[in-house]
Image (cartoon, rainbow, N blue to C red):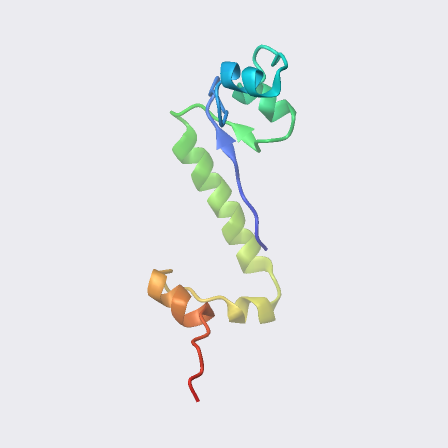
Amino acid sequence: MLGDIIIAEPDAYIAFAGKRVIEQTLNTTIPEGSQVAEYLFQKGLFDSIVPRNPLKGVLSEKASYLEVYRNNTTSSFNSSLDSSPITASSIKNKYHRGSDSS
């Protein structure tokens, strides 16, 4: 299972470029508030909006959901999972196919 959990802070400004730049580039008017987290949450861009203070608890809770999922999947899937720490070298060793010089 692959996926993302996308969380924003309340009233966060989410944009690649500022409103003026977008309006000048597209020659159109951008609605007020269209780059604020709450508006984009309503459009489905985020999974949740969480203030900074409770963020650690929310992340811990979401991580525990992933652990429950991991423990409840099929045994063949579980046997392929490795509980060793993930490092750059472990990823390279597991997924990188070196060029065969033979």
